[in-house]
Image (cartoon, rainbow, N blue to C red; front, side, top):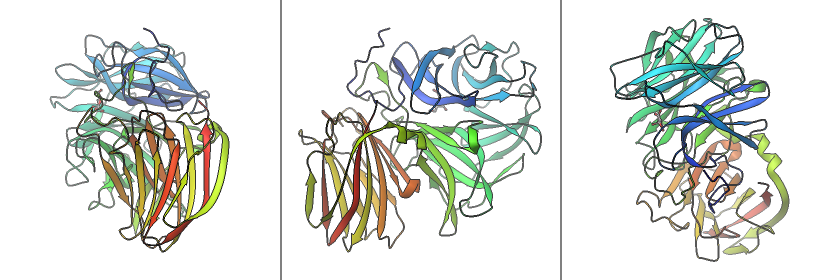
Length: 474
Ligand code: FRU
């Protein structure tokens, strides 16, 4: 296949396959200085099908090296989503330090299989006694496995219909059912998929809590697929949600799905990546050489607000390495204020860092736009305490009726200072408010890059204390 880029919408700094279809990130594991990214991959075309695990590695989360397909379909079925671990203690007998992939195989049923690599993921051997876990249930998939030190065994979280089931194993081969989680918890507008379970410190305290990521399709806040999460405790058997009455979303855009995190990341980091699309229209987006990319990597942490614990998604610090030339400005906005040339040589890959001080404005607005009349309009509504992003006029929105949307999230009331980072690439806008207290990820397909920005105020003025635009290196 021709892998020279033929796509005007191909992102410059987000990961995308050179050729073919991609959905969920899979098997993310760190070993010997390499972050592995496997992914749901159709190597033969740019629509969903022929699912295999594609493979790429990065040493710095921003520069990727593409590797050949790691795991291909066999008689047990195509290769659906799953995870990977490093078996340092050789519990499975494949060799100390083997990377073991645990994944779903799909045929007329869904079963869990394993494969191992003793050459740092360059080649995988399938276990001869696959599958290792079967069921009569039809949606039985996406195993996330991790080592639970306290109980000295492997734990698997599996998405089963509209619940998560937890299993344990001494050796990655024999699995015992432990518990189920889901009834009466969170959003249930669709099937639960792609779980993750990990512990994180709560900022500013000595507390730690467990987070259960739960991808849901459909039933997201703006339709289609989205990532919800639960915060609570895990004792090696059971996950308990400490706030059952609340539904929490990890990202408030439409294109943030199948989010999972890297195992064994250095420095106790918990780094997540999402598939940057939505099952409502993933097969229809206006690209053809590939579909679709991933989000930027995000470092996760927990913070407390209004007696609740929430997940914070901050752009990973490695993204700072992408910064090229920059331009800084500050000004007051009373009415409108346009910045015609945000940054010289703007080819549609840039970051905006904004600090705004409100001076009684009801609406703090800004829109990224181009000379074709296409725009992405963003607003802080200081009366309703909301941040919104409107892509209804962002460019090509006609390929699917579910694409043109306005997404929004609540922000804390009474805010005076607002901080926002926007990551713009050829076909996406990702907003991170207040260091990641909210995130919003949306795809866009403009005819040409948004080179201009227009600030506006309603009902009062505001001060843009700092408006910095960085061109981002490919
Ligand atoms: C989520 C998902 C998973 C499944 C995979 C198949 O997007 O539906 O549940 O394993 O995609 O490609």
